[in-house]
Length: 79
Image 1 (tube, rainbow, N blue to C red):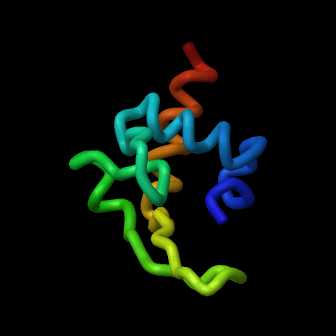
Image 2 (image 1 turned 180 degrees about the vertical axis):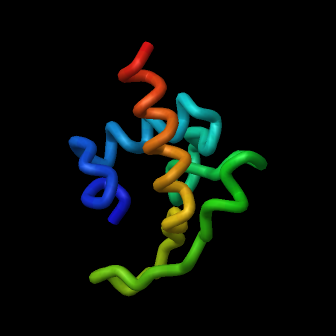
């Protein structure tokens, strides 16, 4: 997933980065994150099966967001 490919610590940290950069917002729904208009071209919301009998939606990020994250993170490190 995105955590592995970015080399960043964990999913929570990546979610916070995506939020801070304006690509997603935290919502009171399932899934708990929703892409913003800025994030929609880089994301896909898909139903996934769970071990329980109910399905849920999950927000997936396309590989194209990786370059955006790398650029933003390198700018932050350079600042």
